[in-house]
Image (cartoon, protein in one colour):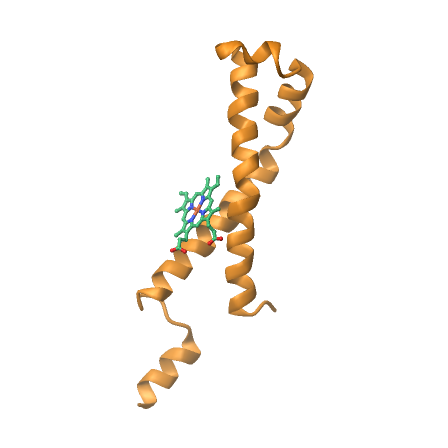
Length: 92
Ligand code: HEM
């Protein structure tokens, strides 16, 4: 079982890992469409590979990041509390 701190770290890690991946998707996409002359810089095979093979990774990272960051944000505002924390608050 992951601790809350580890979950927060996982959410951040997924966000940072997505950054180069999204840039890769944009660049490979423009290579495939032939826009901005990127098809002369990036090999078509590499662009195809990035765009057509990395979607499971992107979906996994995006889902992980968004789910965790939304929970972190809600918890910070006090709109989401764990059962344990709720019990502690009610005791006071
Ligand atoms: C619907 C989409 C997204 C939502 C709702 C979302 C939400 C958030 C939230 C709430 C934070 C934390 C801000 C804070 O600490 O107060 C965050 C951080 C971050 N996000 Fe996202 N995000 C989304 C998409 C993305 C995408 C597509 C990328 C990358 C391309 C990304 C990269 C990052 C990074 C690098 C951080 C900083 C993590 C850190 O604290 O070290 N996010 N995001």
